[in-house]
Image (cartoon, rainbow, N blue to C red; front, side, top):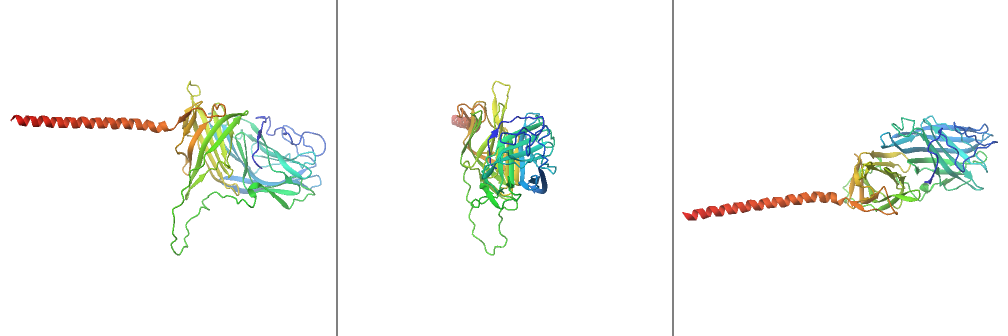
Length: 465
């Protein structure tokens, strides 16, 4: 599964299950056709499903692997999937601030609505979990291949354990087109590496995926089709953990000449933009470097060539979400202050960083700081700072920025507006220092003049005697 475009869908439904998207099984009567109701799609009497929950851990969060084995009327497997997933959701609170919620699968997972599909009808893999949350993906096939079409995710902000103080209440549904490559029939699609889908303030993470739709003769295929990240030519990158950070050997018998570590070069500058209704609404140009301080400091440059931008634009809040393609996710949230005043300004309020293990999807580091007052500029202008700046996320994570220029609001003609430079912030200190030095020099000159003048006057008095 790969990033896809977000499709418009009603933001709230009377139930946690939306109407089927285009390409998904449609309401109809007859064999193997699902019936949609306010309670969600009903399981067909001719199709049974088996669900196994495998307890596991992933990072700092409890996570469950899900195995779904859908069977047809003859009790033969027709759709099989085993995977792990987690959701990172940004939501608005009653105080108009934004918080990040992590939603993982719980132990009470059901599978209502999963169906086999056939030559004319899409297959559907659907699960429900927690307090009104649900997730599904539908598959279509040709004569030789099958592929996923749409992912539908519904989260319920009435779940106060996950969304405390949420301003918007009730189920919220997003529908994302999945651009999974077609897979040969009778092949199993496998992707151990972490993949993600981002849309509408939600990032969906998937890993350890094994899947086969339209299973023939009830037998899971033996040939695998791997995702791009799992190809043998691309060794997975393992981000540092306490366990795998290289340490000095204690068994060395003789001293080994050491050389100073090669300094990490400054990151390349990336250019990012967001659009709303086909018009650019946010522009950013910045080089980014992560500084992770655990057992040993580690500098990670964000490569703009592999980094994609997503996020949201608004009148008083905007979020730029960067995915570097190597399981590193950075969110920058900007807000407008003095919204009712004649002169309004924007600033950076929150930064959220998530680092995942590229092999198994476990969380290596998740950190956020929602108390920034950085990158302040007038609304309608851009903020610029060529010098290096440091954002303190928490005690173990910093972000260094280089050649920064950002405009999260009121972008016109796809260009940056007049920049407010950070350099005057330094110049403001230089002016009083220069004035103080000049005054100090003047005082010294006055004292010296007085001293020499007074001494000359005394010498003149001696000559009179």
